[in-house]
Image 1 (cartoon, rainbow, N blue to C red):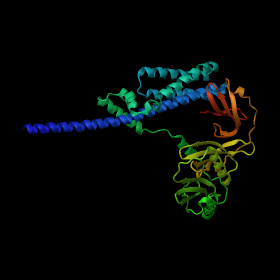
Image 2: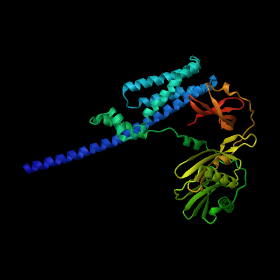
Image 3: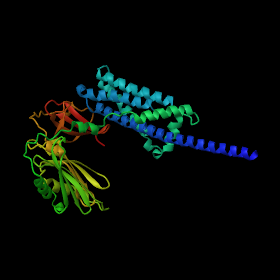
Image 4: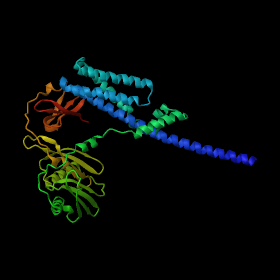
Length: 427
């Protein structure tokens, strides 16, 4: 009998241990899911605060009331977005209330300035301190800057603040919340929107080229691959525009290139291979890029930006209008160059080939003192074509201004109407 009771006790203990292990495993998984959810919410709130601070900077940058309309609208909208993010965070009520009220005052004040009920000068004076406070809050909530973004910190500070581990009802509620969070539909990303806007190449009027012509053109553009194994196929019948797909293989190098069927224009190029640890200098990279652009016949372009990662340089070019030397950003081109030896790894000429239709436009002299507020210095200026709200290409003054209080901004001003087309804060 005692032996039987002992067996029951041992079995019950084993069942309890298995149950306890399953519960603990489930709770750990839930902890991880919640930690991920809250870290995402913290990051989102921090990013929105930075955008709000940048929008406030724009309201300090200009003095014209019409120009200030859009930045003030952005401040009102973003302050509401940040409040929504804060309300979703399991932080203590006192902290949440203080910052919700603070952001509400900023949003309401921006709305009153826009309606003319608060003078612009009064707003600009009070916002100089507010922007500093917002940046400070963003730094505090950027979880990656707190204890190296450890999961334990997120769990201790947020997960355990929301529910007690022993309270299964609350954990189930939180589990349902996490499930809804992970399965919810998200807004379309910027890249997905760009794909929807992407134009086809049906407007090309050139005659169609043959497979052999494309092969010869490929060898002409990339002579170092003349003895590579090459395989060429045509695009599918339902493709948005007809093109040839050239696949190649030579030793350790494999890749592809796409050419339009009409005219045989190079659309894109990609090469993959192992990389060495050597690194060319920025000047060598620029010389290599210039050589590639000349060899492809893209002599009417100018490099406007470059950045790097551990294996490659990424360069952006824009077409230069021959009539006024203005940059046409919409007619862009991108190169990817290996950091170890400067070899061309990638090219995208889609936007360049599409070529925007640029109309004539007056260039009316401008007094920047009538546009910008406070003390500012114009560091650079040139002409460039950018889109307005109606997606029309407009000739604009591209002005780089520096203000000791709010930093450096790049602003595009329509040369004819003096409308502010776009402004951005630089690092």
